[in-house]
Image (cartoon, rainbow, N blue to C red):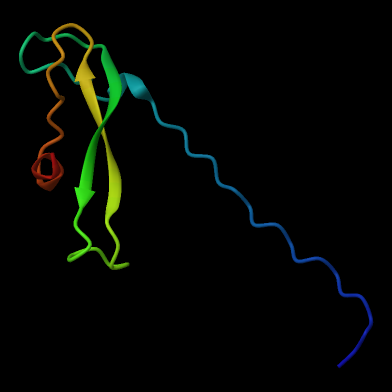
Amino acid sequence: MSLKPRKPLPKAKVQKVQVDLTDAETMTCGKCDNKIFIQGYVIKKISAIISPTGQEVIAPVQVFNCGNCGELLSLGGDIDELI
């Protein structure tokens, strides 16, 4: 084994992806058609019986509420079943 210093590893090149948001769909509230949402959290308590650590776990699940009426934004699929 050599004690001679080695050259630093080359840095990975970060590829910048540009997305044109004018082509993206603006999501709206299903209840009042508002386009502004507030970030919130639903807090889940996971029992020690089913927790992988064997201890009770508190898990935050990020959600978005309508800024006008408070309705939860439906993201569809399995994500909605978590809440």
